[in-house]
Length: 377
Image 1 (cartoon, helix red, strand yellow):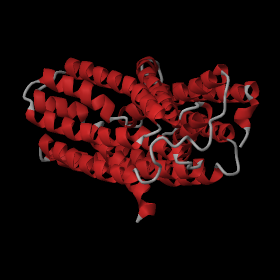
Image 2 (cartoon, rainbow, N blue to C red):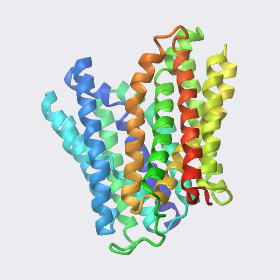
Image 3 (cartoon, rainbow, N blue to C red):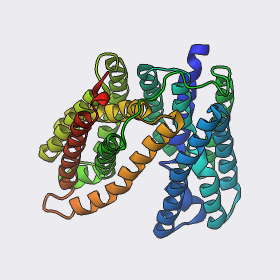
């Protein structure tokens, strides 16, 4: 049973995030009749809170050498947030709850991976654990949609139940590494220019991925002339392929350096986005998801372990990695706006994604030459 504890924790944290985040805009409209402008403003404030919390909370955990206590607190905050959203009747207190409770509550998954690093887990185990987290995202959004069909309070009740399971599982993790034990494997000291180049690469990959996912429904219906259900099929196939891809990536970390694997992901991403521009039917689009799954698995799985190598503290490492991806997701907005305004229509977003992955590949190659230690296995 002890061997199942970490995978269980990853599954519950994945379900909590996949239940709440994709459905948050719907919750705001369903519970408080929020307008489109209000939803945008609330989500911006919520994401800003998450950005700050992803740096502050893990850094505090690093100083204490204890990631389990703040992880459990994140679960308690999620439970409290679900209760507040279910009880309040107007938007202002809901916004306050999302900013003060929701931002810190969202740090739980990052703290889990920081705890694993602190406990001495190697890259393969960390990537395998991330695969379980991704598995939750395959089932989480469809279940959340089903619950929303019965009413928004059903979804909040499910979030609360998962939060309780999170707290219960997290508390059991405390027996793994006592507070105050120093990190067994120190991160490499990498010059700032190396860290900056790696960050540029992952901002670019996150922007490409976020923009592409955002417009898939529009691309399928307006560019390919297919029913919108194909967008769900394509994204579902990609999500399903990400899990075995992550497991393969985890095994390959034994044989290849992080930068070599990230470079392979960037190449796969470049070919994928360029290929999407050229496809003219669902068969080609589905076939290309193999490349997309590899691209995402590498950037998520190896990206996390790479930042844990180059940032001295495990909590701060995963916090920075999370925020680097957030910056990329913010940049995805202009990519969508600029790309969809061209003659290619929404296909231009994928063309832009191909350019972004080339930029990421260039940053990876240069970082390996500037800081040769990053190329080591």
